Image (cartoon, rainbow, N blue to C red):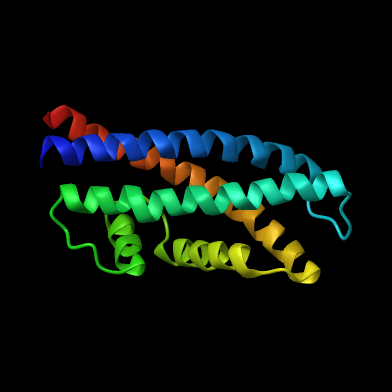
Length: 150
C-alpha cells in the first residue's frame, strides 16, 4: 500500500461523500413526492436530478472507490461484476445481485427516454437509494482500517 494509493482512495471517498449528500437530499425530496402516474414539470425536474445523482454516486462507488480498495488490497481489477462480488464478500454491500441491478438501472438512466419507462426508473431509484447510501456508510467504516495502518 503506497501513499499515493491511500491519497487516491481518500480523494475518491471525499467525492463519494459529497455525491452521497446531494443524493440523499434529492432522495428525501422525491420520497415526499412519491411514485405517481403523472408528475408536474417541477416534480419531473426533481426526479431527473435524483436519477442523475443516483447514477453518478453508483459510478463513483463501483468504478472508483471499489477499484481503489481492490488496488490497496492487491486484488486484480477485473470486471464491474468482479468488483461488486468482492464488495459483497467484504460485506461492503448486502447483495451483489442488487448492485448488478443498480448497475443495469444506471445504464437505463443514461439511455432511456420513453416516458412510460422513465416512471419505472423513478420507482426503482427510490427503492435502491437507501441501500446505496447504507453501503456508502459501510465503505466509510471499512476504509478506516487503511487510515489506521498509516
